[in-house]
Image 1: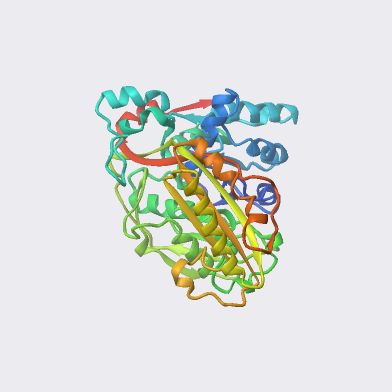
Image 2: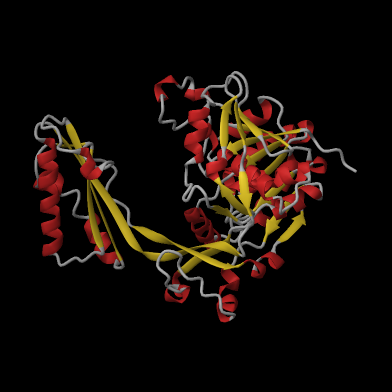
Length: 458
């Protein structure tokens, strides 16, 4: 029987696609860790990747991941670190093949065992599933997916930790998945290492919270910290968080010694409430977590102990993230300077709207923001100061007619010389017309997905 580790160290390497490229290298080389987890997938990311793959069948995954892996693969092989990531997007096999090629180029191919997890991508299965009675009703509106079926770009089920556990059980030291939940990337290695049962709900909940704390990278180790943010030192050298987990489900949140940032109760608490929803009913594919049971305690400098977490059984449903084409948008901006900057920006907005109306252009929405006045806080911002030095007028439109949105983009620049005075900072040409990809959250029966999940060694 394999001896179970007493403490498992799991390090966050990416909190989103586009996060700090140095973080994975620093986590692997900065001190002892057992696992490196890298999260790349937001809801809209899947539709972006699907669009890329439609243009190029070899695309559809986070290419940054491959370049980052090239930098750490020798260390992964030498130090025994295991890497888990959902960077596979809608093409986990293409991602795995690219990592395999990189490992071979670096001469460590024989020591890198890659597993890929597939089965979350439902795009080709949507019609058969709908014929079988799955309506994929929108969780917010109740509308059936058939209302927008012809515009669907991607559809992915949120898988949990079980395929990650299987991949690790089979000896993989690099696991590449599609839409596995952020928390499942961390929970998987804990279940593998400690031998937790999939229905040990309190421990499953504890591992889920560990993953939740790691999923946004440095947000739990001083980055984006609201409380006492001025006291956070050396953010240019910020240390990403590390979880030191025990078999009983308790764990310490920390970071590598000598790095910037801070791990304290405030930093961990702010991450805990991120996208929390109902604190007593945080639902994941692996179980339900009661956030109200979490206990935090200082355990030393840059060390916070997390314990007491309680959980409940998982639901019979899995969430499905659908992205569909919605229309077009464009956003333009002009900066107006002192004196009377806000008055000038308001006058320019009135002029623009009258011109659009005179042209007979119709949009689903025209949205105006005054950056520097109320763009962030709206009416809560109160009355603007008459001495405001500069205001950015930002106007956006959206609608189904691309031609109308295109014409809007041609009406921004003329305001420089045919509107109120003192425009500054205008550069870059006309605003770009962009497609809108809308989000459609749905549920479906778990048993219709799980039989199709596959773990393959590459």
